[in-house]
Image (cartoon, rainbow, N blue to C red; front, top):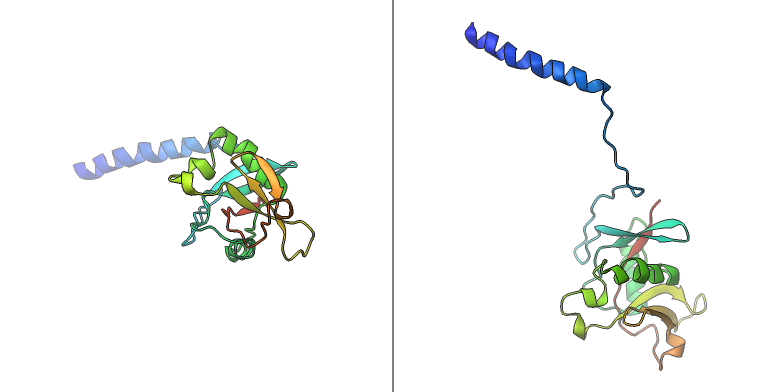
Amino acid sequence: MKKRILFLGILIPFFISLAGNENKKKITRTSALPEVKSLTDSTINLESYYIIVNGKEIIVAKKDFNNLMNWFDAKKACERLGQGWRLPTNEELTAMYEQLYKKNLGNLYLQKENATDQPSEYWSLIENTPGDSEEAYFFCFANGLLQNTAHSNGRDKYEEYNVRAVKNLD
């Protein structure tokens, strides 16, 4: 009998406190960016950073692919991630440089371990001319310049550069 009274003595105040919490406001996130669930792939960690490009929020994968790739393989690798992942555009690469790299965020180029022997270039989705089989843009994080293979001493889409996937926050 004493155990039942003690048990009820503990439960009744607990249920009363729960009922009293119904009128309290729930705490919500005040950030402008919604939370994104973590996705994983065997070669890339898709936990994300965010950038703003032309007023739109873009999700940037947390890490590069593990290996350097030519433009064709880079484009396919990003698309294989599914769910809208792709190579970044010229504007998105510039925003990654300004909004992440310059603030020591994003784990880009020299922010990576053993980066001294890595190229500073990242592939862009944008070709010099749509459908161009040889030339595309890339962004050089060492100097903050957007370049294209047509004006870079004989470089073409077969050069191997870093690859970082992005997608629209829709």
